[in-house]
Length: 448
Image (cartoon, rainbow, N blue to C red; front, side, top):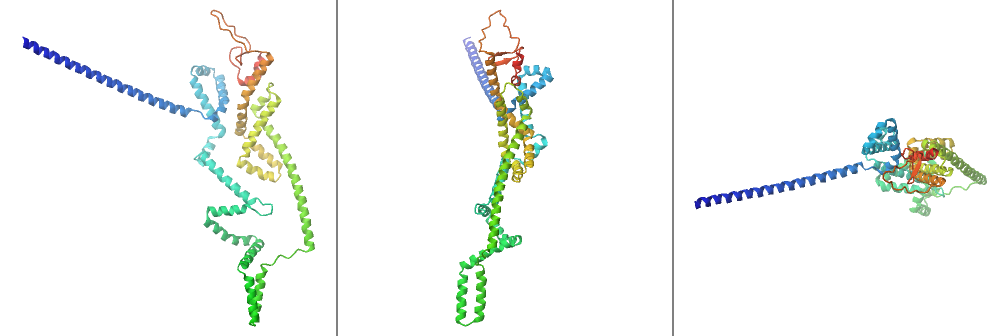
């Protein structure tokens, strides 16, 4: 009986040990699974965070789109006005409205830069690397402009100092090609202007003879021919010396009549230069007056500026200042445009006022450029105008900032019926705020 009890006890102990080991194994496996699950969750959360950051980075707007906020908001208001139910959708889903406004801002910016898809595609095909290709083209254009300046600009002494720089650049760029050009130059020169060619080449020959002492050598040979009594040789050497000395001969002095003609011609040139300077000053004055009037008229005809001109609360001096700022921005922008200046310079040099006015008008009336400059200036000026307008309205009304008492339980707050100001902002009778455009138009004052 004791043996059976002992065996039974042993089996029970072994069973308990096995159960304990199984339970420990299950606990360990559970802990491992929980650990793996936590690690997977952390990994997934990390990936989601990275993807979210990437999306935010991708969706982050470019700084240039800030100035299109007003246009996008205006389009949203227009859509809500045409489709009132859309306002409830946007109110329920504000993120949707933010997304639509973002699309509108980008679309407006791209449409302003490229009016058509075909134009945008053509620009991308011509400049596949975008701004880098454009900058490279501008650098090339600058080099060509410097080359033209060096070639065309005479110095005070009548020479062209820039020509030395051009020749040096040729040799620095490709010495072999530059030498080939110099070898070809005399052949073409003699065909184009033989007189100047003979003059310059004669000086080259004379310098060569002088450096080799050719005249002295020939004189010594003539003396030797005389000593040996060789008249024919002496005659030939004398003839050769005369030919060599011909390259050293100075130009004959002008006669008295020729000098008189030169003096008359110089006096005529001076009078002509004086008249030309007076004509240039007169043209510059007329050019400036005509174009200032043209530029200001174009700006005043812009729809946003027309609305601004009708705002009585803005002083005339401020309106003039805004127009001048827009004009100045346009002038700076076009002054850096190679294509515009390439058209304007020849017409200006010819003193052709009609042509310069036509070129200016075509450039200044470009919708995308005028819109950009108007928007850029108003983006800075409108907040200041709104703030000043509010302060002026408050001063006229003798208003002071009022502290609204805390609402007591059971007491209804009475809402003002007409336009009212709360915390420095104007509200309509129904509680909706006035827009910036309505305040600029003075509607908050008219309604009150």
